Image (cartoon, rainbow, N blue to C red; front, side, top):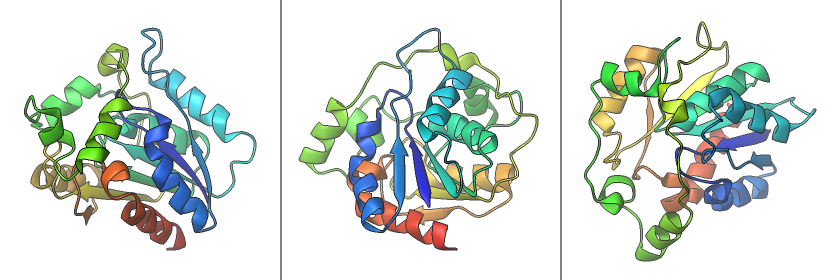
Length: 213
């Protein structure tokens, strides 16, 4: 399987390095790319263009993984390349025409605290937290007001992985949102909002198992 790893807001491909290494160790190909999130002229279509270009012409047996805001981009990519699997990791699940700002309002989402570590990395070691913060980038506000362009959810098998210690997307809210929008039960991992940093081996194992089934 070729895993395509799509990061969330204000992040970068290098955040997935440990997950990518673990997946390669299990025999998978991996593609991760920096989205143009600092570019005010780029929106979700341009984000998806960047990922599809990185996938290249070999788009058979693709599994697209999207984290957080990356749920918008990952879903567009999965539709474009006719992916075999879409995995959303504590990610947004947009409806047709819905902007990210509307998504948060429509789902009754409440943001975390002003403490970045408590909100996003409550399960991180000091070393993991330092690394995650160092990988942060600026995030343009352009995509936040862009409607989700698909007319319907793509016909791609979809799995959702919720994080039980996530203080940005609390797990109770996530469970209800996933049932409402995808009609499935979310799987769960004992992690905060960034399991690719704090639980990379376990996350890779989950993705490997999804591909196998």
